[in-house]
Length: 174
Image (cartoon, rainbow, N blue to C red; front, side, top):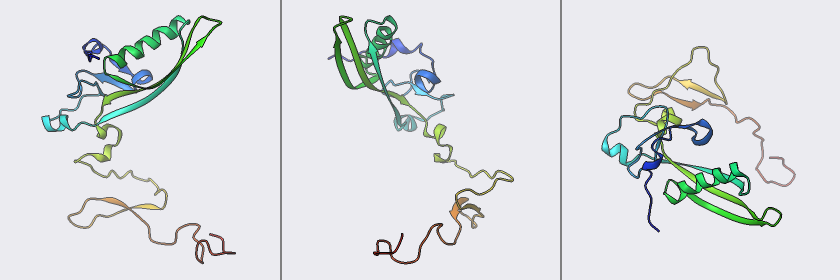
């Protein structure tokens, strides 16, 4: 089967409801759109290593309903042109309507800068101290040793709920 072009989708600017953010074209080297508020300024090597975000979607389409038929055709058009991947499809004929209900599962593909979702995952990460913020989950901000990066470490002390005795010993709760 020939592979289509995604050029026809370059006018799709995205949005939170359908795509989980703004779309920018062309995005990845493979032609998938970049998803994010802004396009990062990437070097060639960084562009080649830009990770893909895969969003799973599912829906049932009643093909006799005009809005469902339009939505189904939109998804399938992106599948046949290589932007979306079809995962599963179940066709159920409904005699009453002389047409099908199609249960479709698909994956939408986007290039995404991991730092946009996880700000601490980049090379230039920094720990931000919020004045007056209380430690959470038994964690406290530690002062970094000379020449090291700041980080979060567990406070010393017993683990909450720790019991004496061996786990699994008959008659001893764990």
